[in-house]
View 1 (tube, rainbow, N blue to C red):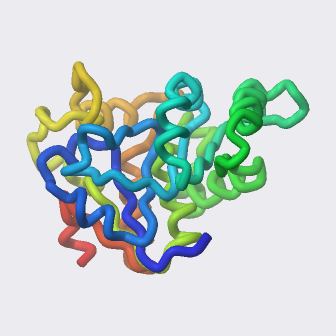
View 2: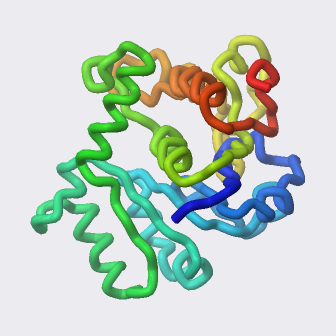
Length: 233
């Protein structure tokens, strides 16, 4: 798959009230993450989904809703990432085995998994960009990181919607902005980012990753909207 122009839609509460739905749907390809819904939020996040990237931890939710998701998104490609213990293909990979059953039930669906080699590649990219070994630093890469790498492989130009920059939470009081636009009760986005950035083990380095995206934006055709990253433009 190759796309001239892609919309990468964040699951952030930053999307609320943007009215960006029609603009997102006009892109050649639309990327979404995990199980972020579109129904009821079309005005702000759009309705089309070309590629949906999911963490292995989101797969149980996907399977719980598969009747709705798969029946209403036959043109969506699903790409799942996860550690080898969950994605091994010898019958002992819990998540891979569950996905295989769904693939048999919906043979027309495009369901793919990151290979172990691609996971290791993403770990190496993180270390090259930050100088930190991902495992030794107690970090887990976010689904956003895998989605961005996949989009750079597939898209000539990327517009990212609803993603804040690395300094956003330190310079702005945005305690009211929720982590996800679709969840209730709503967790504060910046509170989640700061917690994960500082935790010693099993944390996503959301803020560090955004610093990496800022570097990539200067080398690739990547722009950020709602909010815009003015120092990138």
